[in-house]
Image 1 (tube, rainbow, N blue to C red):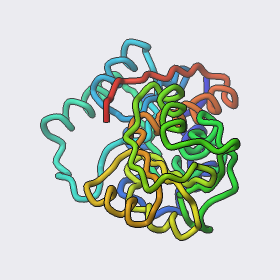
Image 2 (spheres, helix red, strand yellow; image 1 turned 180 degrees about the vertical axis):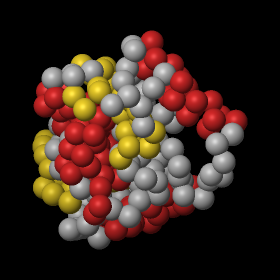
Image 3 (cartoon, one colour; image 1 turned 120 degrees about the horizontal axis):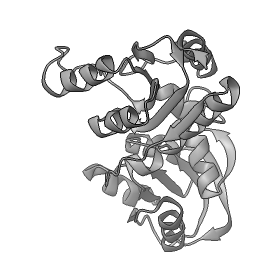
Length: 249
């Protein structure tokens, strides 16, 4: 068992939350009981995840997508009320880390996606960039890399061809990072991977001559929170359970 205060302070420092200007608060979003013995992690703090955490008698829920996003209605009513009420009724805390969890060089979503897919990481696109660069060895066709991703992630990716070239040097950023495509292209990559795709992404990829792969927002962001949860379990001697709530997006 460990104190919620120590776990929160450790995560905040480990993930360098003060270094990010984010769309939501990072860290403790809902406070529950002061001692933690069981952590349940998941990608998004949906009602289904909270219900699973209650079934596990969890003390703490750890997620990538929490609450209180910029621009949303701040009133705690309807769906938001039901979610927060479930946490408070069962005295469960909610820890959420968004961009800081994407960016961590070991536990982050981007680093963990590279581990799962077997990419060799060269480093970030720039000092403050979330995009990682790397290479595939041996080179693969677009279809070949698509099959590899489908096998590792359990989801068929969307493949947009930027030409007939093979894939060697790649860039990637999990989640909804399709807007980074042009920046990544400036680094001389031949393929960019993210979670989602927008209408204009297809035209940009074709006109830049770069393959684009949309591997799924949820599918690409399952691994950082798992790695952080396991890290907490090891450091603090607590139990950790990752719950994968199916999401086709």
